[in-house]
Amino acid sequence: ASPSRLSSHRAPMSAFAAPVAHRAGVVPVVSVRRAVPVARAVSRLAGRSPQPRVSTVPSATGDFAPETDLELSDLTAISPVDGRYGSKVQILRACFSEYALVRARVIVEVRWLQKLASIPQIVEVPPLSASANEFLEKYLAEFSPADAQEVKKVERTTNHDVKAVEYVIKDKLVQHPELAGVMEFVHFACTSEDINNLAHALMLKSGVNAVTPFMDEIVNVIAEMAKTEASTPMMSRTHGQPASPTTLGKEFANVAYRLARQRQQMSKVPFYGKMAGAVGNYNAHITAYPDVDWQKTAEEFVEESLGLTWMPYVTQIEPHDYIAELFSCVSRFNTIVLDLDRDLWAYISIGYFKQRTVAGEVGSSTMPHKVNPIDFENSEGNVGMANAVFEHLSAKLPVSRWQRDLTDSTVLRNLGTGFAYSLIAYQSTLKGLSKLETNSQAMLDDLDRNWEVLAEPIQTVMRRHAVEKPYEKLKELTRGRRVDRDGMRAFVETLEIPEDSKQRLMELTPATYIGNAVAQANDILARIEAIKK
Image 1 (cartoon, one colour):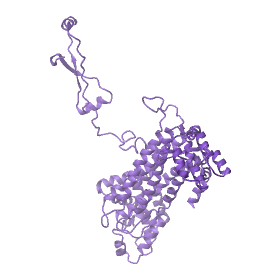
Image 2: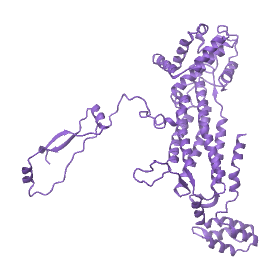
Image 3: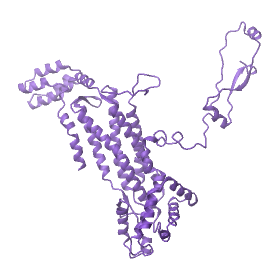
């Protein structure tokens, strides 16, 4: 078709492309033939060979032009933590959101004012009346996202988030005559980081309390599976090759114990805080009230008023070492979960486990038969995301130029991200575990195909009875070869060893050569309890 025979018209567009292209000012064009009389068209085509049909695809330019006015929702959130997986991590919003940070700052500021009122030397802030304390407690108890919005509104003017909190609290205190008289002692002698470090510690403590039940559930579920499958014989694999048999329960017990250790270490990490002023020396405090033991006051405030652990040596910031310690514990726990995910994925692939199907669930968009181990894959991916965040925060937060730089500020706003990805992973692993069905027959069949794994006990018994070159003889018989039941027993019959030892070897099978695996699996719950003591 020559250009002279073509004309243009607007092409039909998809429901998605049309509004986007319209906003971008794009009008897709498609080329078609002009209409000609049928008789003329037939005469022109007579004697000509058929020509290939030519069509022009509308240009995709502008199809994905960005919208700039989308409201935040599960569908428009940038991070899947707040979008696709939002319902799975909703419990963490009250711990790590911007609202949670503002609320924690308000708590610290109000508790500091109450602490100042309890110090006799600070006569300008007399002990608060029951009415004043009741007013403050009601303010904290009823603090809502709407109150936090007021702080954000003030922040647009101050361009300082902590100062905005101070101003909003003062506006609240003027509603109570007694508190209005002491409102200038809100944020007294504080640097912003006095408030922030304590707020972050409160948030972390809350977040850990929200996440650890899921961690404990993983440990408990795996420990119970260890007990249930304590006697289920299974081929071990080292370097991917058949190795001395174990039991499925013992392998679950290995994982449960490892996880329980990390969970226990995590529970021992203290949540530190400071209230020591601009560079950690109580400079302003002592200048204003030299007769007050400010270091003791700070310790009492951090530990008694807020339930945290006091950090005595600081600069402008609490050094964040404990945060790195905490994240390292969670990261190690996560790595063990990832190790479990990969092992179970592999065991599913060789038929050791079946997966219960879920009505309506699709495994593949093109292969209807598929039942994929998607839960363990999802967990593995989210563990990777979590640990990447934890690793960066653990490396970054303990490092600050001189007495303080601001690089920790933006990083600390991501305290909850690693926990969110972890929580998504934990739920996926638990879901995957709930779908597993042990295929014990497949495990027995695998063991029966690998009688050569008995080379280890046979050569060990041979050593006991001083048989010459036991290892080498078994190596010659089994290395790189398949040896069946009859072949192994025929070899044992040739051994010049005591009859009782020979009989024990003759009765041995790959399925019974499991050492004390059953006992170890059955001991797991007691072992875990011992870790907690």
